[in-house]
Length: 173
Image 1 (spheres, helix red, strand yellow):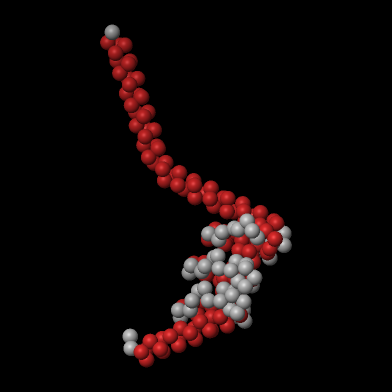
Image 2: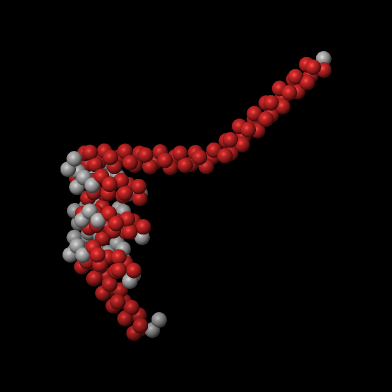
């Protein structure tokens, strides 16, 4: 790429970053999807280090949160106050948002119960994470299940054959 073209590309990216940061700062959530389509960084931050995901949670915009999760927004990115999107959802008792973020893989830090206005949302987040881990374990076990079933069937078949042989031997004697 020649120097002039490279410079123009860098300026366009810089401009896009600035637009994204401004959209986040001014809570213009409707601008974010089109900026992402144009190539804006999904984890761009405003002057308070809020990402689009954190702002979408603060503004209770479930559709945007789902879009950002689908585009692999960083679930663990913290703002200036040290809060993640999940911390914001718990702190404002948005149980559906907590569920959505935990299902997407947001980690629950043991260090932040003090951020929750009520422990109800925090408890729900812990429960959801527990269920998700249980589901993953069950899925892993389920993958092992066909082998287990095949071995069980083989064992039963061999046992039945052995019993038939015993009966045949008794009958022959």
